[in-house]
Length: 336
Image (tube, rainbow, N blue to C red; front, side, top):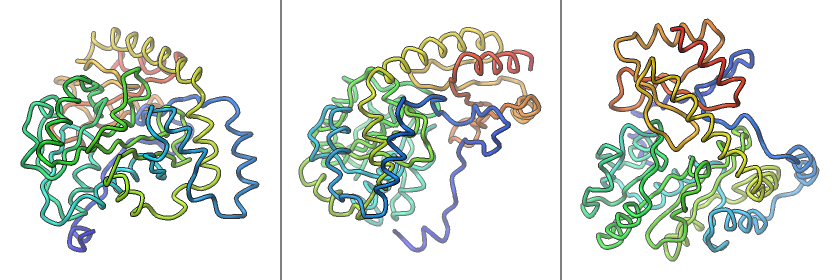
């Protein structure tokens, strides 16, 4: 990292509510997690008096099945953001230029700057049409956060090919792709995929994720990866969750059903963006965002202030939860 960038850098705001009495719609976390997690965690905790196997064979195998890649190409990381940081600190040098989408996850630009790079912002829905050849690295978020739209797989594949031709590394953040049935970019030449287990499996405090890359890129990430990247409980629970195929199927169906229902009702009051993810971006129009946030908070609900995303000035983001919680949100927002 660049020392000057660290000294001048700032933290990035995120969703997430620490008060358990508040219904948290600010973070896009599945309200459910797979059966058997507690038992697996307890068993793994008993094994935590020794270092984990740094090769993480069971975790790599489960991740490879999950995204359809070679287990050897899986790089275990403590969360998706750790996979993003590992990629940028491995690939970038001071002065490098990086293509960054907006509005999108604020950590991309922060991490680029921490490495001494320069982010060049392009609208997320225009990025795949740009020429990546002038950049050292390009970042794509699919589905995009906070808008929720997934990239067209054919357009993304064509963009990846242009990145290879231009010598540009492509980082694809698939943190929310598990909520869809779209294919992963894992295993493609010149691409690093970052995956998170936080959202889909409802365990943000576990801190488990992984990167996927091939060839020399994979070797560089594996060499740079810190030893014992995952604690024993995170590795064991993560592997268990990634093999919970029926849970994933049921989650996708529930989220799709509830998201469509929520959007249909919210569109009478707000502009609700189309979404493939477990959240909806709402443009509040001539309403005051602070008043809306306060109104929801007074009813015991936390919303995500989306004005912290580049390019948004009158927006909030809401998660998709279970039907009971979603009904409460709809009641509060439709009365605002």
